[in-house]
Length: 217
Image (tube, rainbow, N blue to C red; front, side):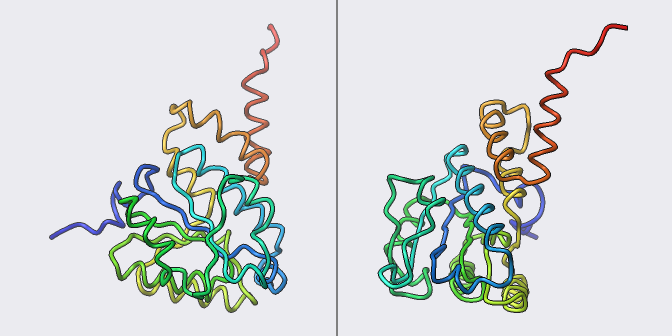
């Protein structure tokens, strides 16, 4: 019997097999974001975006009717100043070949999605991409909805069909996998300081203690 790709070591995220699509983190969506505090969603999304650059994970930015819904949030665009977000009319990102052709050309099968709103612009592409053979992960703390119920029901719906919910710190931890990988670990620390909340504070304290010479007895 063939083992599911979602269990065992192969069920964990790997930078070389991952691709990220960040969907519609725009003013219109943020204005009606009521499932979470918007500051938290922005913080987590920008933290995830910064981590993709450390691990060389291709990342696609996309907006929907930006001429009315607004440009992608500044903190996210600042991470990718060279990248013009793909502007769509499709509500479902996965119906736009401008996005899907890039994903297909990458050859990567671990598809990581985050966006606004969870029940619409995240659930639609997640469900369709799963049916096309991708292992789909949704970063739930970089997503949000018009209400807590809308977000919760969207996550439940996606889990029911086999999509994996995950938070942004879990994503970067699976990419890192081993703290002995110093090249990425040394770059990841500052991102956690800025975006990791209590975990970032604790890590900074740990680095402080490691750098402190114990007093002589």
